[in-house]
Amino acid sequence: MNSSKSVLFIRYKKPFGIKEGGEQATHKNYSILCELFGIENVEEYYVHPNLEHETVWDKIKGLPYIFANYYFGLTPRKVREIYQIAQNKDIVFIDRSIFGIVAKALKKNGYSGKIVSFFHNVEVVYYQARIPKYAPYRPFLLHCIDKNDAYTIQYSDLTICLNPRDENELLKRYGKKIDAVIPITFEDRHPNETSVSIASPPVALFFGAYFPANVDGILWFIEHVLPHVDIHLQIVGKGMYKLACHVETHGRASLQKINIFSDVEDVSPFFEQADFVISPIFKGSGMKVKTCETLMYGKTIIGTTESFEGYNVDFEKVGALANTKDEFIAAIQQISQKFNSKFNMYSRDYFLQNHTNEVAKKVLEKLLLP
Image (cartoon, rainbow, N blue to C red; front, side, top):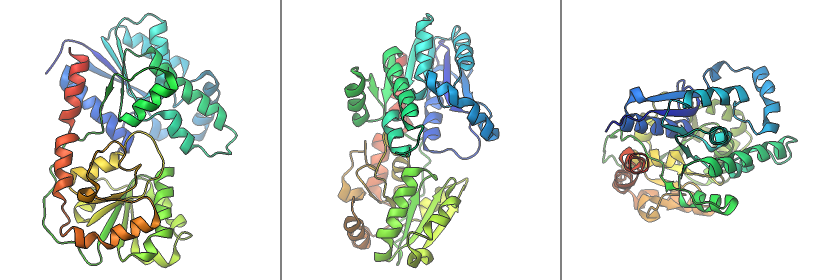
């Protein structure tokens, strides 16, 4: 369906190579808007058009802007550029609430179109977990991020978040309801359905970029769980080559059980080969993109409460819910008895019913094309 309306889509960076979880969600939003309005009617604005060439000096130059609530590469000049481009657009879609100051500037300067903002997380909660507690810049950065979340709520005409947890947190913090909840979705890539039996020992896959919550989770697993289970662990993700030196200090006896694959362009062979997926993630906000992708590939998942946040799955059928060392060990030890195939039809069916891009498209169509 195409509309005569025009859209300005504001995104964090121009994509280069491998997309991380947040960028995958951004690309999904952009693709759906192109379907609804026509690609010729959707203009992208990259806050970071050349991020791959960013230097340390570029980052240092941006630090003073934090005190004026500009973050993630935004500057007053860029906000003025956005305002000028927006004058000829019916809709401005701000892909991250961390750019809430854009919504404020548009509204304060009389922009007459519709401002739509998408929360990938409750960003202030996300950064509370991400920023070291004793970092001297922590209070200033959190204040900036909190302000942008608040601006997003206050000045947007429509707000969207990923799950009821974030919806409730935003209402509690800022006193205004979100307009729609759209979960993580993927364009279905039709994985190969196979009835191949689980190997002995089985191959467990951990998928995720080199990022604090991922690093903390997998190192915890290597230290506390891996020595007690007979599996082969494959770790796959952007920048994960940096994990190798940490692995050596978190379970030397387990090193022969681990292979790390960093910056792979196609993750599908790893999902298809894996007997099951582990997701020992203990902190965060929003939803875990990797959980949705795992469901799409029809894999059994053993994960924490945080990993399954926003997914209303039957834990017995999808794999297992595990939050402690003993729960992970027990679930892994029982995996071959409970599941006799690498392919989990329940996971695949749950994805098809709840997390394809068509689900998100229907909600956005109702919001933007009434």
